[in-house]
Each structure stands twice: as structure tokens, then as C-alpha cells.
Length: 613
Image 1 (cartoon, rainbow, N blue to C red):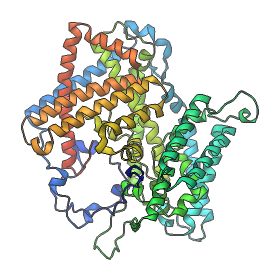
Image 2 (tube, rainbow, N blue to C red; image 1 turned 180 degrees about the vertical axis):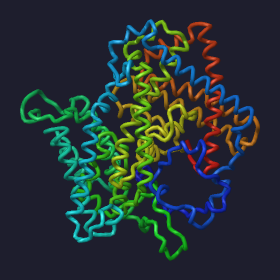
Image 3 (cartoon, rainbow, N blue to C red; image 1 turned 30 degrees about the vertical axis):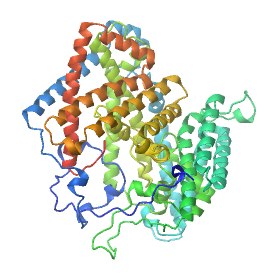
Image 4 (tube, helix red, strand yellow; image 1 turned 90 degrees about the horizontal axis):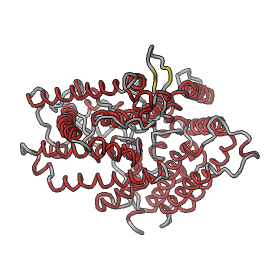
């Protein structure tokens, strides 16, 4: 049996950290803009009360003195402020006063801001925007029924409010919670997809049965992958297994007849269940003793201070008893979990079950702050769509005749719209899950415009998906030992998972080969050897500028304008001396921006936030 099919090692409980004597600054200032999201454990545990050693500086990297008030960085800040102002001004000027406005004005509609149109021409965000009232009603109904169901089913006569953390130690809790989650999911799926829910259940049952038969076998991982990939391809080619019209399969199609569109997310959960089950069987036949995930407790006899709750990574890597994987209702409650069913974030089966069995309380203050972030994101998107109409301009191909600067602005704001239109639904569904006591990974940890590293960008963009592909594709394929093969395999799957098209396949291969030079440069010029040299930061910044340009081009091809549109845009920018001059000035602006991004990450480390992206 090859190492590709072996389960990843189970991680021990996290070490206790002592931040009380460190020189870290409190999380204020510019670093307070960073979303503190990885797990509920760092939201709920009082790390300041822990009492052992802080990770060494060699392990984390030395924290450098602040450069924010230096003349060099004052100049960078001025350049970036001027650049952002120009991007905004040019974007607004492409509106009604521009000669090309007549070419795309029919795609706009009246907005709620007086005197302004709104660019609601993106079908993906427009669908979510128009369904916000329905989604709010569904989520509130879910939370209300959950409270009523659990409270009425509780054997306790206490009037204490039912919460996951309160009932975690009671034997009936998992049964009641699983029953409610499964029942609500089946009911809501019937409303959404009508009789097509039967097609979904047939696929889920087949995956469950195959998982039981293949788990622990040498073809277990490969079989899980083959089955689910064939299901995705079949969904795409048959339009959701539609064969003709009429009959009982189309008599009631529900509110969302195209069930197979959102099934791509469900397939990731099916693969997670199958492979986690396979690894659990392998782990059960080994001699390694299972490691019990500890919950925070001030009564731990080994320490005089609280034990931190398990991390997100530990919850995903720790297997459960085999009976957990063999229970069909447990399987359905995970695969069809209502808050995350439509769009994610993606959570592994092991992580989900860990939080069902041993939920950690999520502070109301943390949820409220997350709600404020969500509302602010929605308002930002609304203002952007009311004043900058680049989506309609792009769809109408009304960029012909624009100058180099205007073309660059169209590309930039289209990518910002793509970022926001994904961020907003993901944060809505994650907020719903948080209110239910479930803490899935945050999908968008950084702003799209705050990235200069290719690998860092993909760690922070659709983060839950990144964690999923690392666990189930990258590491089994060999990880860093076969970096090229693993990276190409990851992005090929990512591209085809989004859509079976040549454009996205081209995007996947472009991104793969964009990441490789950064990895090689990191090995040739490692920070451990050259990090203290005065020139190292500036060389890294030049590499960051190149990364920004290549990542921008790849994402414009994959998600905005396609290959032909990108070709026309590049010809417009590089086709004249004016365009070349603009490109050089833009690179200077990007150089200043990357310097600020790098210093922002240094500021995070000064405030105790350690990230690889």
C-alpha cells in the first residue's frame, strides 16, 4: 500500500502558550482590520492565562521594528493613496458622462440611491441579492425550530436556554441534534429542489454504501474519487440527470430546479466523508492509540491553567469511532447541513462531528462583530455597484476605444466585484452556522487587493476549499516532495470543479505555473539566509509585483473576460508608447503597495497574529 493512501498523522493537543511576558502589542491599530477567523478556539480561549513557554523566535521568525513612520513608508503611503483615488475617480468617470456609456446602459437598472443606476448585471450576485429576504427567513426559521425542537426534546425540566455547549455532555444531545439537522435539511431540500431531492438521495446513498465497502481497502481513496468525479461529470452532461420532459421527476421542480449547480459543494463533502472513513479504518487497525480531543477546562490536573480547545486542524485530523461513520443519519446531517449546503464554507466530516460531539461556546461578541463585518461588506458592494459599472461594461465588451489606464481600471474593479460577490454569500452562510454553534473556516481572510504572494493568495482566497484540497489532493499526491505534480493536480481539479470549460482549465494551468517560480525563488533566496540583508526586502517586493501582475492576468482570464478579452486588453495597454509608460508607472505604484502589504504582515506579527499568507 502506497503512502498516498495512509491517513495523515493525528495531532496531539496544542501546546500551551505564554503571552503574558512577551513583547507583543495588543491587537489594535491597523492590525485590528485583520479578520481573526481560523477557529473558535482562538475566539473563546483566554490565552493570556496559559502558562508555559511561547514559541521561540526561531520557530516564528524575528519580529522587525515598525517602519510605518519612516520617510520611505510615508512616500509609499502617499503613492498608494493617490493610486486608489485615481482608480476610484476613473471608475466613476466611466459612467453616464463617458461616450461608451450608451453601449452598456441597457444592462443597468434603477438603484435605491437617488439619481444613480445600479449594475446588477452579474447573475450570480444578482440571484443572491434578490433572495436575501428568503434566506433570512430560512435561517431564522432554522434557528427558531432548532431551539424549540431541542428544548421540547430535552429530558431535563430545567428552564435553562438550550445551547450546544450546555448539552454537549448529555447522551441524548447528539441524537436530538442529528435528528433535527437531518429533518430540517430534507424538508428544505424538498422545497428547493422538488422531486429532484430523490436523485440527490440516491447519489448520497450510493456514496455511503461504497464508502462502507471500500473503507480500508487499497483502492478506497481512488474509488471514492472516481465515483464522485463521475457523478459531477454526469450532472454536467445530463443537466442534473434530466431525460426528456414530463413525468413525476419534473412535476414539482421546487424553487431551485437546477440542483446540480450547488451539488459541486456537496460532492466535496461526499469525498471528505469517504476518505475520512477510509483513514479511520486504517487508523483503527494500527497500534497507535487514539487521542482524545480535550475541551477547555480550568480543572485539568496536569496544569494549573486552562487547556486550550482543539484547533481546526486537530478536529479535522482526528478520527472518530467507526460507528460514527457507519450511522446513516450522522452522514446525512453532515452532507446536507442546511447553513452550509448551498455554498459552504466547506468543513470536513471529522471537523463537523467533533463540533457536534464536543461543541465549544462561541462568544456572542465575536458573532456580533462578524455580523457588523457582513453588513459593512454588503453596503460596500451596494455603493460600488451604484457608482462603478464595470461589470455591465465588461459584459457588453464596451472597453474598445478605452485608454490604457481605463482598461486597467476595468480589470481591477471587476476583480473587486468578483471578490465581494463571493465574500458576501460565504459570510452570510458562515454567520448562520456560527449562530447554530458550528464554526466552519472563514473563506476570505484578506482583501483581494492585499495579496502579493501566489501561494499566500490561494491560502486566503476560498480558504476552506484550500484546506480541503491540501488535505485530500495535495498531501496524498506527495505535497512539497512532488511540488510540480501536486500543484498541477490541485489546480486542474479546481478548474474543472468550477466548470468543465477550456477557459477555466487554461486558468488552472496558468496558476500552477505562476506558483512554481515563487517556490523556486524561495529556495534560491531563503529568508533564513538573506533576510537580514538590506536589499532582500526590495527584491521580494519586485517578485511581489510580478506575482500581482500574473495573478491578476490569470484571474481575469478565468473569471472575468476570458482568453480573447484578455488578449484585447493587453493589446490596448501595450500597443502604444502611452500604454508602455502607463504600465511602468503602474509597476511603480504596485511596488509601493507591495511594500505596504509586507509591512502590514510584519505589523500583524507584532500584534500576535501569525499567518503564512
